[in-house]
Amino acid sequence: MTCGGWPDITADLRRRAPALRGKLEADVPLGPLTYFKTGGLAQALFEPADEADLATFLQHLDPAIPVLVLGLGSNILVRDGGVEGVVIRLGKAFQEIAVEGSTLTAGAGAPLVKLATAAASAGIAGLAFYRGIPGAVGGALRMNAGAYGSETSRVLVSCRGIARSGQILSFATSEMGYSYRHCRVAPDLIFTRATFAGTAGDPEAIFAEMAEITKSRAETQPVSTRTGGSTFKNPPGHKAWELIDRAGCRGLVHGDAQVSELHCNFLVNRGKATAADLETLGETVRARVLETSGVTLDWEILRVGVPL
Image (cartoon, rainbow, N blue to C red; front, side, top):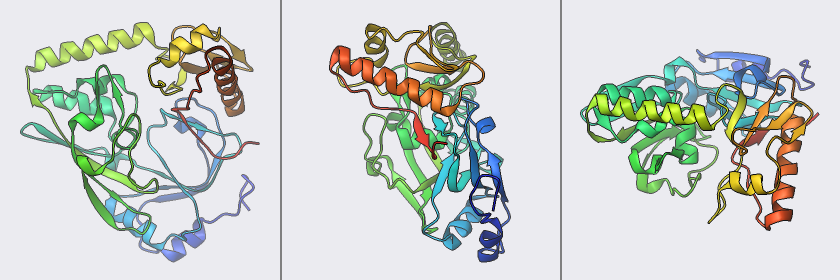
């Protein structure tokens, strides 16, 4: 039995797939791996050595064991009771970026800021908006991440991933079923890489655009705090932050969690907030917005695991 209260499944996982080359551990604290810096343990954490290693792992994994993919931890709240099953983290082997002409191919673990920088250095315009999104390529594919007037569906050429069965699949952009902050690809598919395309541009001008995005974020978002990014999706015809502000929630506090004074669609861990503090605060905001405007806010931040 692990200290998280679940049985240690790592020995059985290695027995089922003795050829695994990645790192497999039990009872790994997930809080330090997320932007909120709070939350419970993973029953097991697997960091595959490469795409083939991940495919092997999934081929031999008991279908009854839940799987969660963790990227850079920017858009996720891990509940205090932890995450049952296996958390898969894509490390350095999934962070390479290659440039060819006006296209870039990046691993799913590559930070979006590095993708934007690589594009700018190569004189590829159209991907600068990724400078303003604190996440990785895999999350951008799953959520159709966007900001500053553009989104993933506009720059993606194709991508690939691994199904729960271990099968490697490829998708054209038209096959992703993209809509606002959503794609229709099976939720248990793990993205591993993607190819993006831009247009020829002047590196100096692209870097200047990225500098403006950086400045805008610093002035309007709590980027230097423990926050998970935008908390709620913008409802049709509305901006979430405006609804939250009108509901009188700017600066609202629960425990050590707070609605940001700077941008009220951001929740902030002031230092010792539990995941329960943050989720309760978010639900309070949703209730007040519904009461004052009649609009139901949908969470954009992914909440995972079990409460204490």
